[in-house]
Image (cartoon, one colour):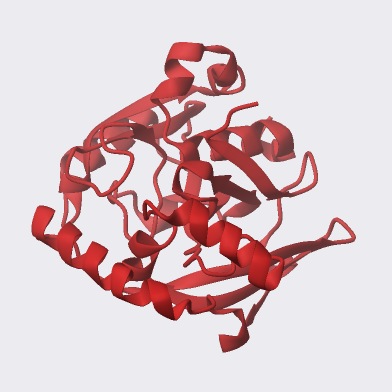
Length: 256
């Protein structure tokens, strides 16, 4: 078992869920609980991070409260709202463990006081049977220099045209335990382009090109064995580990 990651929910094997099979309920009831004694600390952490990395900006995020798989055919997501500042000041704070303990004591929920922004990742499968991975730059706020998959909230774009992509299938939701269980929804997307065509579009760059430094491709049969390769596995950031785990469990039938 990898201490970096666990699975909050995973879709049925040989399946994955379409957009029509995912129901979302958004309510302020699902926002994080405010611990007034910690609010000044959140503000102080944000100011410090802004001084260290002036390019950081705050922004609204969806906060996951729960994910419930019903009958193996429908996933109900209950979401509130949060922001990047609150994420850094709760999930990513030195006091995250204490906040989790306080959440259990006050609400029976270790995540109650945490921002819990729902990340997004995609196992992008090219026409020549490879998956796309990105090396994160040293400038990003977390998992610097580690290997990731395309995704995030507004992560580096690889300039792949929308018309070359299939509709995404949801594989499940993974938790990143380096950031107090921060959740990420992981998808499977088929791409009509070859790995070399994706590489050429990546090299064009874009607004957020500074967030990654290189692109790489791994054959599907090697992705399925990636967790057995200790050196390669440790290069992955937790969200990428979660995505690979979910893909190996679910394996959409039209990808096998």
